[in-house]
Amino acid sequence: MLDTMREHEWTLDKARELAATFGVHLATIYRDRDAVLDDLAKEQLADRGPRRAALLIRLRRTASAAAADGQHVAVLRALALEARITGLEEPEPIDVEADQVPADALDRLRHLYGDVHRLRRQCEMAGKATAAMQAMKQEHELLAQIHDEEVRRADLDRSRRTPEQLFEELGAQLDALPDLLRIRLLAERKP
Image (cartoon, rainbow, N blue to C red; front, side, top):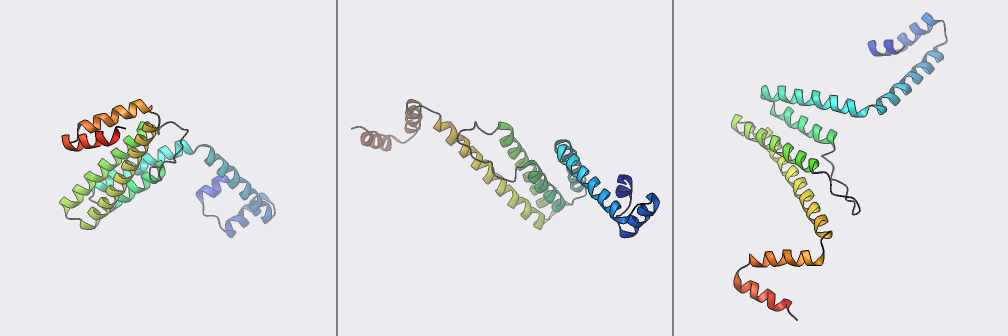
């Protein structure tokens, strides 16, 4: 039955044909079909990682072919789909107790930004204004995500520092200020 379902479109006529072939009632064919579909769904849920990896490979190949053909809008859509598949489209959840997000997530965002930036430049040079605008929009979205992640990581890093370390950092920042402003700030800080 599984081979029949994969090779042919499932129709009432096909179900009747199977029922006649196996000498069973039509309801039995539908019950068996539902059981097979349930088993397939369970199998597919079990091996999502390898399927996701294979999909990403096919998606990247398609995007490369589209870029070679000058189909920049298709490439932008493929990059957006890749971001959704890899989870980069969603903001990282903030968990105060957890360690920082692995560095590779930020690196992947930066790499994706580089790809979109290069694509936008190609679109501009090819005179594809609509595709260039869409790429620019994605660039801005990626820059916002990168900035948010960097700020979140800096905040998390600051929250782990001792007051002495924070005071040293503030002193270093004050050294960079002009003399008069630094003197004023130091005077206000002293009791």
